Image (cartoon, rainbow, N blue to C red):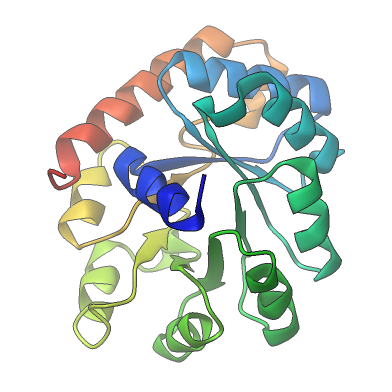
Length: 216
């Protein structure tokens, strides 16, 4: 799948599950539960134990059935490691030149984290295909709407603070997609074995996104 095809697929899905798993085994089960609920955009963070091995296992199991990325990249070397593990896209929580260069050099879709207008433009100029607005919980949908005034050409994706109740507001503000973490897939539920609840919540999120995102 080409870079543009991957970006188009992520935009079509409209939702990335941001997973900070408690263990490799539980993380794999979390993903299985999410996929069963229709969530096909998966971001495994580097804060997950043995994250590269987890991504490799998921890539082997699901192939192109899911859009599989690695997030919370903070070191340039992680970009190459993520590619070798089978990631389809790369996400960082912050904007830093050396890290951005390493991510862009992979040729994969890149989502660099930013918050202020200066950071958003910097991330875009560094080559970010979609600027990750993080933490979204601090600013809300109105902030995206305001940013899109001067920067209507920069695709933006909030992560943090996304829930079923405000998904429609985010899309109304013009986001490319949304990233959801604990509201979609709580670590505590995985530890408690509540995978059916994760699947049910996933269905609710997917339904909300499909109703909120613009028609293709």
